[in-house]
Length: 357
Image 1: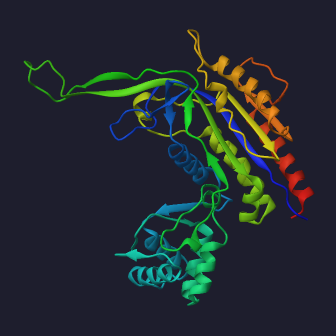
Image 2 (image 1 turned 90 degrees about the horizontal axis):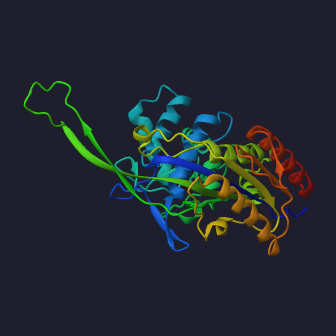
């Protein structure tokens, strides 16, 4: 039976105190112009990295990848896990030959460009290298069994486009729902061992730029594409649950020791659509303006936009939210993220069953 399209949308409103979680090349917090005003911005790359780190820490049963120049060393260690009698030097030579035969170029036993390699792919490559499999088998290994983060976020290989993996997810740049002003923290550091009583100044001084913001965050997953990539219903559902959990709980770590901006979202809204994914950032094209907080007003505008887009889209087959605020909506509210994920699992399980496997 032909599988219908199914899109998972995840929306979040999250407030940040003074922070600088994503810097540009000058050290300033990233910003963007939207709706005629300056907004705080956190790049999609920064949040995807945080999500991948969350995958690694919280997905022991799922296949997670590594993105590195040191894939020869990574594969060599996998080879030695299978056959410890092989010396590290021999394993490195065998690993480099295997990687080259699979279509990835190296120089000085390192990839010429960052390469995304899944754990299962690495284990199978190691086994195939010891069994002296031919190039076709090695290439096929790199095209099959993608790690969940490779399937979700994609892989581009300039040397061999056949090894490219189309991303099944999209992550938007988070922007503030309101205008922001950049501020500067002037700091000083005292030399604990200074004996110069005449020197009352600091041993070091400087400035750190920061801002405060309430962010709108958005990501989506083409569930039907992810299912096609992973070829396993249970793995697909587990990956989608982990994706939502990581989106909610992860946080880029820029200057986090300086600002301790360890917040969580005040609202998470999850939908499943059969027609197309929908980013609701248009709710904030006219910026929120307030003197007594942005969260509640941002949530209200988001819910309003959710209903407005129904003029153009089909109604979601699943919609549920969790919030810390008293804002109410006709959308189904869950008491916790755990309950929301349980409902999402049930809906996807039934939908994939209807479409056939």
